Image (cartoon, rainbow, N blue to C red; front, top):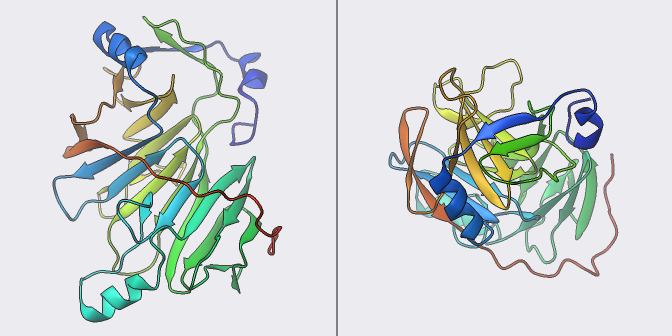
Length: 273
């Protein structure tokens, strides 16, 4: 099966490797660069969503733009909405994948997240897809994005061995009304983009919609793949400080790093389904 949690080595016996191309310049720079564990795609237009890409679990949800991957803030800005936002911790909720299940950690939240309609008590384990509600009010949908890549990936022009044994990504998208537009993906192998119902770029959650582009996690870096007949096999290295045209909209690629607290010693899961 082509889903998160299955082995790419299993599917490699049925399909030949897929060859992806990178320019010699990108290959040389990417191999010499430090590992990129987090990136943000920030639009020039404030009405478009910010996309946070995470390769180093856990994915962090919280109100802070600097201490979280998914920025959870209510909009429009007002005394009332700012007060609602402050109920959410700066880095409140920590998400990790365990095959096709989700582990949720909240070490010291003043206003616990609701998981399965129950307030969190340090740790929970749930099946996906699911919805959690930060601080009892800010709803976030959590889904597994199935990979469309059934084969091992080979990069033409770069001696790289695809060692990923899991496929797809974990996607976090707010479903609360009137919030700061931000979406996040914990990228295991790749994540696709689509047009949402407003024709704006969005992380892909509907397998029936044609993707407009894809981001791969390869060789400790993030790569952009435009889905078009002319560029179907081309990868572009996502280098901080460079602009990316996403669905016709200019985005700035920004480096992002977080200091993750120790999650050891928390209680065992208090919710399971």
